[in-house]
Image 1: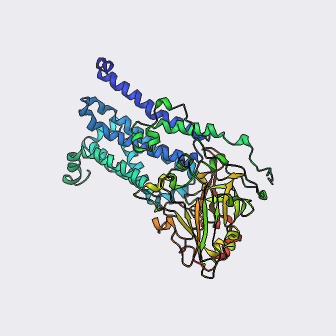
Image 2: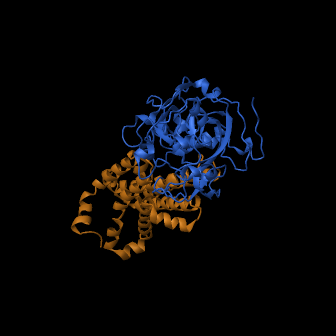
Image 3: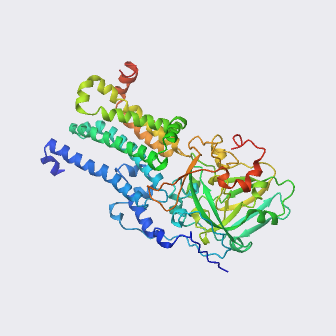
Length: 209
Length: 334
């Protein structure tokens, strides 16, 4: 804590971002190493798919923590790490989709397309990935400036994407609902901090522009 | 007498990951937890670990298995799933819903004493105790493909005896049209059975039509890979019906009851639109969550193992069992 007091805001952000890179990137390298070596349980394919999928969801939820947290800890510059967290959520979502396609379906394109159409849990999963793709692409500063006010409306899509990602998780389970329910509960608690904003976005304006 | 089984497709020890290393790696992965909050969401075993225990592994007393005497199977060309994988990747929800839960939570299962009752519509009901399971009938080895409804499969050398032989000894009456199986119901030993909400109603129950049960392929396994069954695979005795999805092959059986009417089955009760009574492996009938046209065969390969293969009707056992269903619409009776 004392160390932080001496640091400038800019340095703190750099430190935070460096820490985030370490925390969020290392596990991906490590699990893929183990999976390639066949040291990740009996079915490394399933293990990788579950790990990357749940990681994407956890990082996405972590992203929702930041804006309610920043004023509470009286450190508004914390908002500057939101994009990085969001991009890591997309990174894990990409690894998740790529692992499913490469290692589970083993590059069978027709099977992938039919699975996206026929399996509701994969349909909603693909939807979530597409939204994250759009948000990631438009997170570049020059696009953000170009989009102006519409940028925020577009990025509010994340609020419906997180529950849909949880739905994707819930539908993918053979039985049980407790684990997805916990994720959903945490999501709603985090969304409740933005009640007013959500009301503005969804009822008064009647959707996105 | 122990007949050693050394075929050219028999895997050597060197090909199999050393069990202790395998467990250590798994532990490291679990203890990584991932992004702090991970601990909040996952099981208590993860939450309770900390950095200091990352590289130390508390010795868990493993369930003791012992070698069995049996008549070895005729060797075939199929590549078997390594034993370490067979005994660590299990669907046995009584011990948790993750594939790695049973091996971790089932090690204290008490199988001695055990009682397996064969009763119901029979003239001579009887029961087998723990020792009887291994000597009542001569043990033989069967190398069967196991096809999970989740679209993965294994090749496993089971030890046991034909279900038909056991049922015949009880002398079924003419009213015996179906066979109902039941798993041990013991909340103290089976943590999964303590869950109050969601999931299976315990005890786990399964069933077969009598002609399916009397088919020579239907097998009661008391061992695998030359030894008694570990608890995660259904110790001390489990069913193996290789032409049906894995969930039909009920584990840790305490009751085999011959009955008049089609008995309830656990997954069918939980999700009737997803799991039928018959549950024959059928590439042309999709599960809502999985295309059943192909499967991933789990052997010794890692992530880049190209192991997706076409699924065969009746899991490739059509010659032996297709006659059982010759006038049935298998899309309706899935």
